[in-house]
Image 1 (cartoon, rainbow, N blue to C red):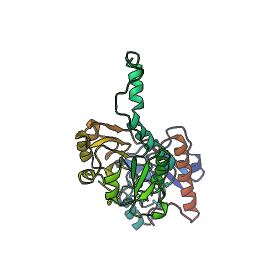
Image 2: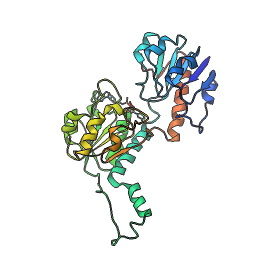
Image 3: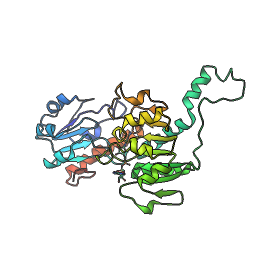
Image 4: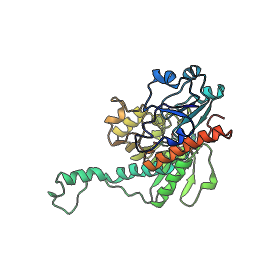
Length: 319
Ligand code: NAD
């Protein structure tokens, strides 16, 4: 059985091993694969893995041997799952590996917006504290989170994990999900509609997947419904935000801060309006990537194939 990994580098830049897959078949791992090399590299392999290499209907038409696509990520919007289904190809994802890492990173971004730890450290290194007439100084407004309200859009695994950390910091939580589950409510956590969340949150964090229904969910109209100076965090998928609208609102100081780990086109393009927007922190899609998290991802990716081969596929996203 031939197994091709189309873009293995970000999962395993050298600190993990592919041994689990190698036990199952003849494995070829490419660090990355350009679009025009996909068909040639897949050849007569029946099993392929992708992380961010897009697999379209046109490509599936040219890869008749493929039976199983393992997406090495939670978000599987890179694969045309309907086209795969029509051809009887099973597509799996990795639903849980990154929950704790992404939730933790959400707060790395939020706490950076509240305290600007690195910028203050740099000022100290440059001598600004040494030359300061007072015992302390700060260059940005410092923000305390207790008793503020965090709105969480998409209340699945990551959203719920974020809510727990938020509550530990004393934040109240408003959560919106298109499958609202009132049983998740407690004293400081309420399930609400989107407009209520937008109107009452001091921080808004995105944790819904990228679907047609969620694309551009943060846009001129939704921003107009938000509190002034709101902070926005996106660790989910870039196209959830209309970046031109966010940049405009940041520059107009309607939105206080934004911190995004994902953007509409990755790697980021030089003309992305967020690069020059005021008060915008951008990180290069790293929320998922601590080694502990990638290790889990690798093991679940292998297990998805083991279960598929045993006739009991799990984590199938195109049933
Ligand atoms: P999940 O499936 O457990 O939760 C997603 C939630 O969003 C579900 O409860 C679903 O009902 C809800 N949802 C779907 N459509 C919606 C809509 N129109 N409006 C509101 N809610 C809607 O997924 P998860 O594990 O919590 O992951 C969430 C997303 O995080 C993934 O889809 C992925 O895009 C992203 N992610 C990013 C990274 C990163 O490194 N930055 C890593 C892992 C996951």
